[in-house]
Length: 330
Image (cartoon, rainbow, N blue to C red; front, side, top):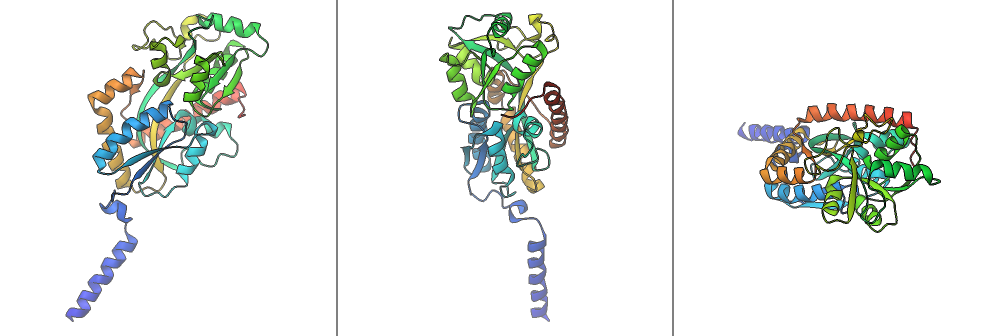
């Protein structure tokens, strides 16, 4: 009888292990295995900068290594598709953006992932406007200078971006659409190489996030023309908003980028909760809050449910903009 009882206990334990949550969700995660933080853009850009700041601290909090892996291309689509197909075991994180998780679905007819269904949101890191910049040696000093030059030149001025469908690209297209002016879009595989060509004068201008542009503005390599927020930024108080320009059609112009962290859909809820809680603690640290604001970012603090609702609203918003401006993926 005792042997039969022990056998029954063993069978029930085995059944519980096979029917229950994966081992990672039963308190065994992380096991010491390195976690990959996928950045779907080239090194040096906003998503990469934030990813590296968070990865180091997250690794310490979890007692393991968090490795940043850059997989740029197609406005964040390449790396996002890789993440979407990764095992939902808590060992793959993705630095998602307004591009990869709100814009691309309306730009690419054969996107290899669904920005909502393929992922579970973990954290909204923060939001930030983009800023229009030109090289310090550029003759353009105001937005009106830029628009006048674009009107006068066949094909308009050239404008770099981190890739087709990124917030930098959408800001350009939206401004051109509203102002009735054409520009020549020059997509790159990330902000890093794009902004270097603006500094070097190979490209006339660029909309970029303050995370990337601010250091170059402060060093005197770039001149800030206008920010895309509704109000001026505390970090760039002397730079007017696009809406302040007084240009017809641009009075209500506003583009705000955002950064978030996602995991593949199906990742066990306990892991998502642990990641959310740990990253929330990291972002709440005074040092991190100061770093985010020094980049011109506004820190965010949302629940995963609130992030999901916010993301859906963004998908709908940019779908309307892309359709109205007839923006096509290149």
